[in-house]
Amino acid sequence: MKKIKISVENLSVEAELLDTPTAKKILEALPLESSVKVWGDEIYFDVPVSLDPEPDARAEVDVGDLAYWPAGPAFCIFFGPTPVSVGNEPRAYSPVNVFGKVVGDPKQFKSITGHATIRVTWID
Image 1 (cartoon, rainbow, N blue to C red):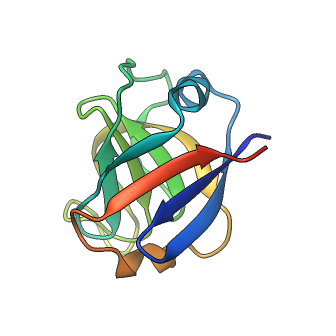
Image 2: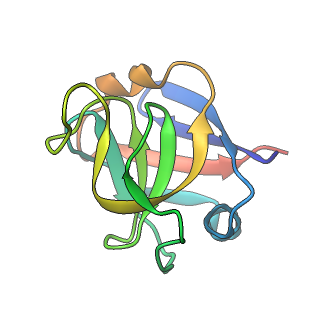
């Protein structure tokens, strides 16, 4: 399983990627650097990747999921409810391609503010 490192402000976490076409395209685009946007308990940022929704694309996601939002296009990290959630579960604005999962506690991302610089790199 491939791993990546996500660094933003004073936070650095690892994530494991699934074996999906989206994960492969994200890996090919690394390293990434962008400015984050915050939407409820989700951070997301623009990525230079253009993909269609995968057959299993969905709006219902889990805490810690990494997803690609085709409408953005954006890389999303979910760590709690968003403005379109029902209850306490995270929910994307529209269907996303889930391609990985944060290792450890994704709620650490609650400290991140909008416009912070985020970097995503591969781990050898």
